[in-house]
Image (cartoon, rainbow, N blue to C red):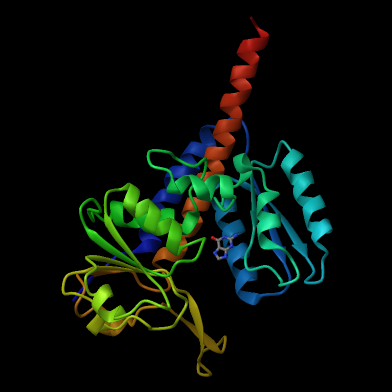
Amino acid sequence: MARILDGNAIAAQIRAEIKSEVARLPITPGLATVLIGDNPASATYVRNKRKACAEVGIASFGYELPADVTESEVLTLLEELAQRDDVHGILVQLPLPSHLDQSRILQAIPPHKDVDGFHPANLGVLGLKGKQPLFAPCTPQGCIELLQRSGVTIAGKHAVVLGRSAIVGLPTALMLLARDATVTICHSKTANLSAVVRQGEIVIAAIGKPCFVTADMIQPGAVVVDVGINRVDAPDQPRGYRLVGDVDFAGVSAVASAITPVPGGVGPMTIAMLLSNTLLAAQRTLAKQKLLEQDSNL
Ligand code: GUN
């Protein structure tokens, strides 16, 4: 039976570390969250992010815009948030309503406040050997932190990433590569998918398809990280749905050596990394202020 990689417990430990760092700062780190439209899952994610901010002493400023908001209204808000001294990080929850140009909106967040790490100036740097972005994207960073804090060695391992999205699959693959894994990326056009995934000593599933990864695709002893959070109808549940990952947990946990659950695996790690990036943004602001003060004393 696989060991459960407990994202709830590891994220709680990270939040405690962040809380004590925040308490030592002479300023309150601030995160602005922008939620557009009425996607219920997005609303839940933003609520959980703001709740986590409150728990560690980060101020959050929530903006909720209607689904029919114009792009220029969104851009005006982002410009205003970019200027504010009490806002160290800005997050626009994805996905956006289809009439909005996602890349234009993400590029309107200044890279030094881009705590989601989605600006091309941050995402793109992940592809440059030896360079670090100002902020790494939260879910990929959460997967890596979860592996490292669970004692899983990445260097030299064959890691198979299922999914090539710009915000999870591709950056996760690049970050594993930077940590010296041998990386294969699989996607919807991959031939002999099962055979390829079975080569993975570390398998990261990020495709958004409930229970897609089954036991026959996993080599005995592999470490399996399930990024998927899929709502499937369950009339017997109070909310009418239940959450399942991209991995068939029951089947795969019989062959893997370690596996993340859903919920309680990558999800809380993503939020912990957002808090960590927001703390980092505030610390950088302080460091810059100190330098300016030194300059003016010369
Ligand atoms: N949608 C799915 N994952 C994320 C995330 O990490 N950040 C934001 N802003 N939107 C998302």
